[in-house]
Amino acid sequence: MNESEFRASLAARGCERIGIVEWEAGRLSPEHAHEFTAIGLVLEGGFTLRTPTGARLLRPGDVFELAAGIPHVEDVGDRGARILSGRLEPSSA
Image (cartoon, rainbow, N blue to C red; front, side):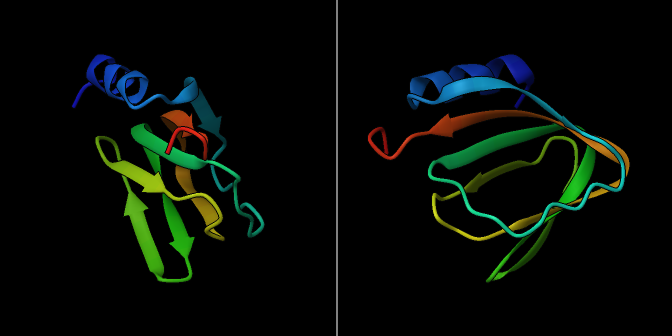
């Protein structure tokens, strides 16, 4: 799926705040959770998404969806990460 198709799919699902997120190389977030479902397409670089159920390495072309309330950590690789993301608010889910 390319960036244009992914943007269209996010909009069709009712996602809000669609945009590009850029993380610097080596970034490690503290464990946190969101009040919204996060949906993303990795455009460049990569990161490991760690949740209570395991870890998933995400690279360019990979799509992820993280449900609201799930604690997680983002561990960004040595090339940083550029992600197209959208938020699916609870009232839209």
